Length: 207
Image: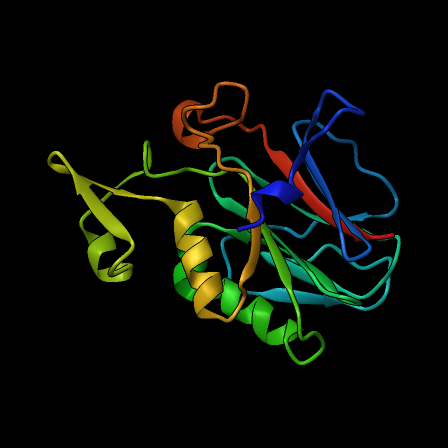
């Protein structure tokens, strides 16, 4: 799964990981500042994906963004949900994947929009709630058959593994990831752990 493609960020303390691939830079940051070339959608756990072909672009409710604009940074904010960056030769994308979005087909929507334009897509999955900590209710057995496992008398789901499995089912085989659980990593924000308003930013931009 291309773990070797990941490297520790050294240029800034707030940079958790950075990856350069196919002429694009994927970054995961603990802290960031808004800037005039950064686009963040209004995230509402939807399955809506925006095609960003002009910039500036009005603030819009969506949980995924794709673009072919160079020099524009697109990102999503997470604190237990899975951030996914998608990189092609000309088009890039970023997706916020919670359990609602996963069930509603947010990944399918993003890939459907990219595949007519890109043959070879690299996917990168950031830190999120994993199977060590992400306890779920029994309704998840029906919502995500094959994605939920039992430990003791409780049910758990690994969002990262679930996203990777879904990506593979969609034909995406080049996948990198940061294998960290936000819930049990005290240096990462976790809504389930702390009800925090803090978020990490996962972004991608074409150079």
